[in-house]
Length: 252
Image 1 (cartoon, rainbow, N blue to C red):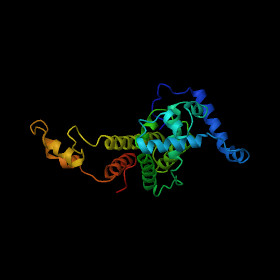
Image 2 (image 1 turned 180 degrees about the horizontal axis):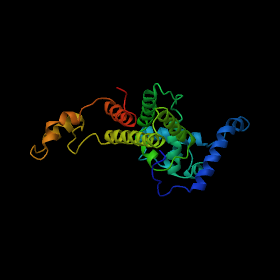
Image 3 (image 1 turned 30 degrees about the horizontal axis):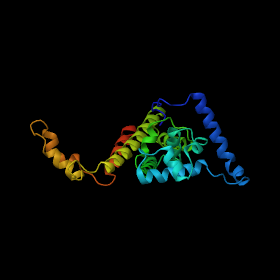
Image 4 (image 1 turned 180 degrees about the vertical axis):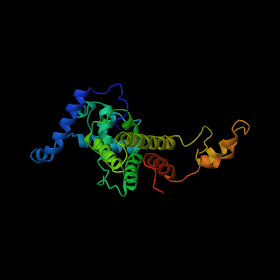
């Protein structure tokens, strides 16, 4: 996660540190303070609930602050008192989803299974909300729940005995793959038909590959089935397994 480049509207290092400090303080005292005050009409939690409902219904790409405000029966100005802009909303949404991920105590005896399980949990959270993986790629994460998952993934990889830099890079590569995998799946659902109304599924893609000139694409034509094979999350598991084998080769 930490290896990604910041977006154009990324906050400064001092602003990021202040934001982390504020979130840490809020996580320690939020429950106590909430118990002693009346429920406010608009809260960050309500904003996130409404935003996730909107994403689940129509996808993250079309999500706007106005859309969220409409679901809450208010105007966008009411939201900006709690969420700075759409980029921050995306960061908070990813944090909400990451908060649902269970992290195990790292175990050198089964670190591969632990890592794959955490990755699968992230995948399932992102796939539930079409396109939301895009939010994980736009800003440097500032939500503690997101950073917690990064910490947990790194801890598991370090338990493998891999050097720190390799473990850090492998964790970042895995997170980038998860977000890319989920984003591609969301895009495929939105673009499931061609101009003629044909459903573009694996069978259709295989057929199109077989139609390529064999003199120019001999291997593609010959192995069209292999190029389009795999059901469920077969490719997801294959790719991450390959990554982990490169990090720490299995013992013979």
